[in-house]
Image (cartoon, rainbow, N blue to C red; front, side, top):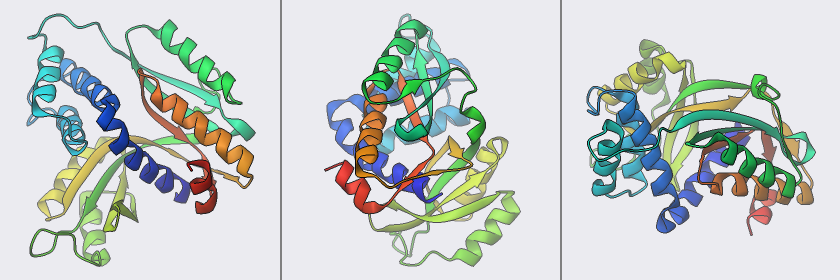
Length: 264
């Protein structure tokens, strides 16, 4: 899980930069459109929409953009091309497994863009199922424990958290840095339990920063060569920069110094 968390932290940092350019805004708006279209356009009664809105707000998406996306999804703001959720799979440099989730209105365009990104950076787009078996889909709740002034406490009460998780039916958790020096945790649960676990943690007084479905690698490859690390992270960056791509997950781990060197 170490590589998974490290990559998640990098993506959070990258999201702050991309948000300035509007890249994250567009991706999160698509999530809201799809959630509104496949459920009621009311976040109190649509967990998928509620989590999409929370994610958008945490990234700084303006309320007007959120409202417009909901209106597009519900059909009250003109017509919007139907967005299709598609999963793609492939290999990065050194045989690293990569799983991609996309929302697109043109699967031929998306596949061509992905194939070009892979081939230019030492990887290749594979057939459906080629690496999917290496990943499990989990519900992930990111949280921290507020203190008296609603600021995060220095040390998370692990015993109290574990008791809450057992009662909520969650599977496991790992301590992580939710944001910079903020102590927190990521809780993993069965996808069907995500809403129940998120609600239980919120009712227990934890501050939920994000609740989402995520692919978790069930095995990992250790990257030790700087050349491979640079090529791999450049590929990950190129894939995430594609307009139709919503998320990219890979099964690699690497040392901090390689991560910093690759992103320098």
